[in-house]
Each structure stands twice: as structure tokens, then as C-alpha cells.
Image (cartoon, rainbow, N blue to C red; front, side, top):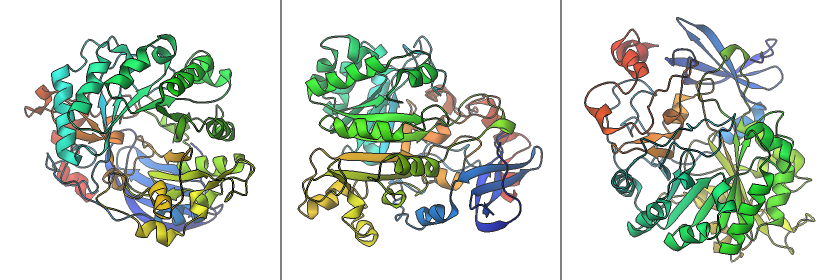
Length: 469
């Protein structure tokens, strides 16, 4: 792990985070070093002091933190906060923001075995039934209503033969947005397949798209499948369904291609509606002493630097539905008259003030404050625009449990629980999951969902002791 510059230390604020070895919740100091890099430091009684790089620029970090939005609490919670974070999720009474994007994992099976993927790739033997998936839809409807978006994910959802039925079920229950998280292999290879999903009610494709050259996919997927990605996008164009390019940003693999991905998306904005840039995080076994992570700040700076003057670092603003460090973004408007950049696009943040943006926050909206909606209210058309979102997921090394309590992205499981995304995929340094896949009904009979929860609930890290830490 990189070491901070110890010649100067400026305290910024306190929070709580985890020991990556044992996942004990610890008091944590966040500070800037002499080079303006932001770190968080905590000390575990058993595993010593852990220092994690948090952001690349202290001024930018403080600016992001200063522009969060009011918290909208969940309309209901379905479990008590008995143990410390992250061991009482589901959504517990400690949670501070409602879910706005809820996932349903329809399978653990996958037709790729990507080296960098945090998901399982198994035979799908224990996939949820249609009845269980129907119950998960009902859980989401009760929690946030049906005017939000549901993302079907996995594994690889297209490995399920009944995926059109799953899509149709969601639409029949009143959800206006059903998005498919996919690697695109089946969409690209099987004629008529995407048409069947669209006919069933699919409204969007969330396509993993890590770069514009084959070597990137050799690193992230184990083989060059760039041609598959391009065919999948063309199939979406033919079917008239929008695509969001989901980019796992990995240092020294594709972090130098953010500008190229941006230009590709702008050139194909008739079908590409957005880019979701996600700094890679760790789920599984890892070596804490040699782990370094990219933050959203690194991605924002790299994107701005590679955008050839289209985007400034301060054009990317916190979004309204979660902690400001979790989700930031910008909408690029296609407007030849207003644009000064040769691409013909202009960041929406150039057309409004931050005060105007925050004043437009709508707590009744699933998305809170949306750039396109503000532009529309100004009478500015937003066709062929491009949304960019930078999503800062957390793992055991980077976990901030205060941020976790403000998570708005939930994974819904058959038992009726909705678990924050970063809790659901959390493992300790040995690769032990806190929450088993799907957290099935039999795990709610009073037994611990995993050995980790058992340790924290009944072992030496009991709740009363942990609160004092």
C-alpha cells in the first residue's frame, strides 16, 4: 500500500471504517498529507494501524463533501441495528437514505470467467425461482415504489432461459424501468434474442465495456471480446433500446482509455445514453499490505485530463441520492449553438449554478436531482445527450461505514431484505463473505448468515465492545 507523506498532516474529519483483516468497525481519522493527498487511518487492537489512500486531492475532496444533498430516509426498515456496521444490513434502522436503484441477482451462472470480476461464476444450480424473483419485485415495490429502476444482474442474466419471463414479470408489477446488466455475449450472438427481451418490456442495457482495444479485454475478461461488445451495441441500436457503458476502471489497465471511451460514447450517442465509470474494488482474498485503490477522484481527474478540454474536474458534481463521495456525475448536452468544444457537446454544469442545481433537488423523485430535468425546465432539449456517472464502490480496505449508511444502491434477496451493495459483496482479506449469496430464508431463523457474522454477534467483537471502539 502506498505510504502517505508524513511531513505534514491536516486533520479533515472523523468517520468510522473497518479493519480489512477482521472487519471490526473502528474510529477513523481522515487527513490530508503534505502533498494534498487524502488518507484515512484507523488502528485495530488485533491487527495494528491501517492507512488507506482515500482521494487524490484534498481541495477537490472537500469541495465534493461540501455539496451533498439532504438525506431522504428509507420509508421503512425490516431489521434492527443489533450489531455494528456492516453486520445488521437488510435495510436496518441505522440506515439514513432510501434505496433508489435496486438489483435482483437472477443467477450466479456466467458464460465468462473474468479475472477481475467480483461475482461468482457457478452452474446456477441454486438460482432463485420465478416465485422468489416475484417476491423480490414485491419487496422493491414496497420499499421504494414502482417508479424507480430495477436492474437484473448476476452472474450473467442471459444464461437464464426464462429471462424474458423475468422481465415481463417486472413490467406486469408496474415497474417502468427494467435494466439488464450483461456482458453482451448472448445479445451479440443470438439473432432475435434482444428483440424478445424488448418485447417483454426491457428498457435498458447496462453493458460491461472496459475499453476500446482488445488488450484491455484480454486483461479484464481473459480474452479479446471487443468485437462482441461492438456487435451488442449495434444490436441495441437496431432494436431501439438505450445502452449504458459500464467501465471497471483499473490502474495501468484501462485508466488511460477514459477519453477514448468518452469519444466513442459521444460518437454513438444515438444509442449510448450514458457511461458508468467504476473504480475497481476488491471482493475476495487479497493482500492488504500491497493493496492500492483508485478513488473516484482519480477517475474524475483522469477523465477531465483525457477529455481534450470538454470536461473540467469541477464539472462533475455530487448526485442527489447518496453520499457525495459515492456518486458523482454530469450530463453532456448535444447543442452545437451552446457548445464551445468541437464535439458539439457542453457539460450541463456550464449552464447552471450549483445553487440552482441543489435547489432543484426533489426528495420525491427516485433520482433526486437530475441534470436533464433541470435543462428541460429551462426549455433546453436534451436529445442525444450523454450522462456520465462515477460510482465509488467500497471494499474492506476503503469501507467507510458512514457512507455505507447512506447507500442508495441495494441488492434485494429472496428473504425480503434489501442489503446495501457494498455490504452484500464485502469480504475480509481471506475472501470470506459477510453475506452469503441471496441470504436465503433459512438464514433468518436466528442462526448467523456467516461465520463472520457469528463471530461479531457472539464472539469477542460483541456489539457493546465494538461501539466503544
